[in-house]
Image: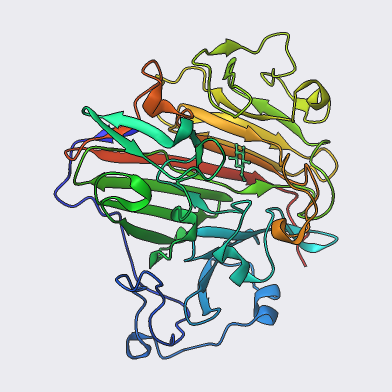
Length: 406
Ligand code: BGC
């Protein structure tokens, strides 16, 4: 977590210029106090265009930002770049619902696991594409102490607390501001979490800004402030399958992690406190290995946090590179965070609850701080004081075969 002194105005560049505006019926927020700050029909440009799935599939290769209401609360945003890449987001959970990469044969391939029915994101048990918080990953037995006071959180992953609790950030409706610049399009989502929400102290304002540029980079800029000391650990929970979501398992994908250590955990997923060298173990991804090569030697499959090498280096660091040898598609992840949770979709079981995806149908690479840091004094701190601003940046840089020109 990079902490900066408070700024007079920490908000990021927001340009609410839209290519397409659609009047939305009423309020979009279930927390009743927050509304999607989307321009009303009156503020729309005159060239109002209805967006439907047909126009989506025919999206031209140019940078555009589009928006459509899904129901009276859920709004979908579509970011397209001039390379033919499309990212779809919804305000529920500030979630990535699809990432479409152009493909010569198939036209477009969606490489992130999703629910076709967007109302399923109201529960979303596997956390497909969502922002997790306040504390992504686990806190042992849902307890931690801060400044001499003990706090108790929901036990939603017995016996521990996982991804912010029963009603984590993935289940909240976020305010949305569109960003439409010459070289990037995006949405900045904001959520105000009340003091005591899910047991966490302090009212916290969280922002996650997603932008897509013409270098095929999907960038997430996070920031947060709190009016009381608290803890946080934000991440995005996309499951990637570069061969196409639903096309089978990711066990043939090859992974490289710039991490020579990982964090061993007990049988409930809580760190033992050690950081262990991966060398000469099935955990070693310091050079490319197929995910399936040694997964059988890892009990339950990969579900571990890895520690970034050279964490002190300036700027964003490449922490992970994933590639699908068959399609040639690749994803490089650069981050300001000290770790990445490698999770190989071990709990996907083909049921409707998880969108019908089978075990190992996707891989999560969640850049974040270490699990259970509030109870692990040796780990980098995840405490946020009122005078500080939490900041995280993570970039997803995609590579794909350029579509043939007409
Ligand atoms: C965790 C898994 C958990 C999954 C839930 C991952 O981030 O590491 O243990 O089952 O999230 O989708």
